[in-house]
Amino acid sequence: MFGLAYGDSLGAPTEFLTMKQIHKRFGDHGPTQLNGDPALVTDDTQMAIAVGLALLDALDNPPFTPDLITPMWRRRFVDWLNSPDNNRAPGHTCLRACRGLAAGKPWVDATVAGSKGCGANMRVAPVGLAPGLSDETRAGASQLQAALTHGHPTGLAASELTAFAVRWLADGTAPSDLAGALRARCHDQRTVYHERWLGTLWQQPGMDAPETFIARGWDECLAVLDRLDEAVARGDRTSDPCEITGGGWVAEEALATGLLCFLLFPDEPVEAIWRGAASSGDSDSIACLAGAFAGARLGMGAWPDEWSTRIEYAGDLARIGAAWDRPEVSAGPSER
Picture (spheres, rainbow, N blue to C red):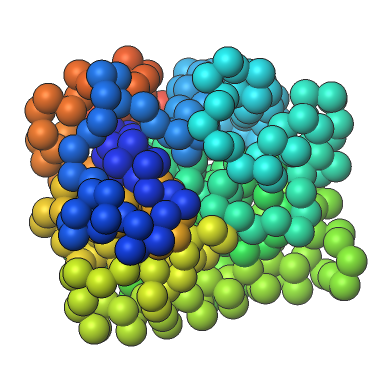
């Protein structure tokens, strides 16, 4: 959780800058220090905290089900929408969908069906961190939290992959094995539609079956994983990370470019988020995801000690992290 916020904070000042502008303002390495006290974050961290706090509430009231968590996420997202701190260039899709949620619309009507923006997966790391969930539940929950605002199948698939990457890294998966594991999950899940979690979301123009709907998302994720493999093989640790895997404005590219920054520096977490922040794309989201991956693998001790007292929302980040650092959080008998 702290790595996610650190990346977000470092990437915030460069989000809409070209590489030339970044180098002119921050030097060749880009921003390397948290700015301010507190060091401010963006909607990426704010919404990740919203997801995480709702999950804490839900896991304290097992069993964990869609009917339990959906109103909790709705409330947290509406609270975020109405917060005076919601002034960090939030995404239009999140704003539009959350306004619909605030108006009481069913979430399948409030969501922006055609959007696969990175807001779907920039906030999903807590679903990966939460222990005690079956794979089916983690997958369904990852997709549901995305679907509340972003109804495109690629947003759903990329969110699931992001959550599983976080979980696998926390469980000790080697970085070199990560892309292959994600690719295998794409193939394994290609026609799996989590109806219990997603309901009738698939009923969109041009879709004849739920399997057709979700397969589109997995196919687009597979395509970007090909680009990730190419970028990792090239091993360029100095150029714009968006050159091959994309600018990260859409969910699958945010996943791939965030992963690229992490995989280029698997044992150097600060370097990983520096690289994400010094990018021509959605720098805060890219660095945010890179930080989540690095933090999941390496833990709190990998980051500069003084950052933890300066980052905004440190209390919420610590609360979520401390809860899920425990050996087990009960998810109820059905999830064991």
